[in-house]
Amino acid sequence: MIGQLILRLTIWFLLTADFSLANIAIGFIIAFLLPRSYAPPEPLREWLGVLGKIFMAIPIAYLEAFELIFRPHRHEDVIMEKVPNHRSPLLIFLDVFLITFTPKTIVVKYHEEGFYEVHRVRRTSNT
Image (cartoon, rainbow, N blue to C red; front, side, top):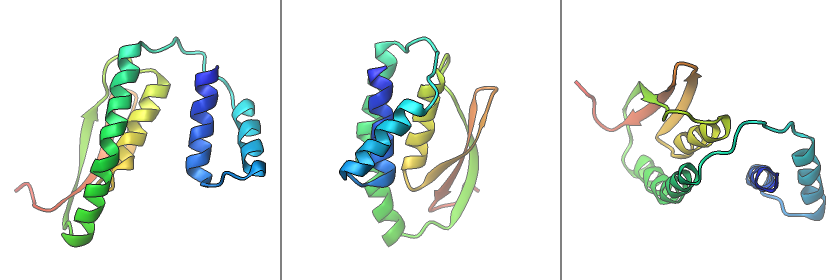
């Protein structure tokens, strides 16, 4: 329960970027009112892998942003990326967040068959 509360508050503060007392109170109220997930807990190894990807995604996002500014990307495509096996809804959400966090990629759709439809931009064509 504490982990879900921390995750919800973190997402709230990332969305609002406001640490006033009123916003903190609103964040707590919303975090408690959102429905709970009753999925079994994920293994620690899965969480450590996601946390490692998060820490790696931050510098990559900055590099990609500067690259998009100084070296325009003229080509784009849509690829299908496989979802790792036995992912809970929370880890699927974090995967989608990480893919969308970097400026060159965005998840367009999640397919129940186990794939993410990812739109990406590139400097060169594949042909």
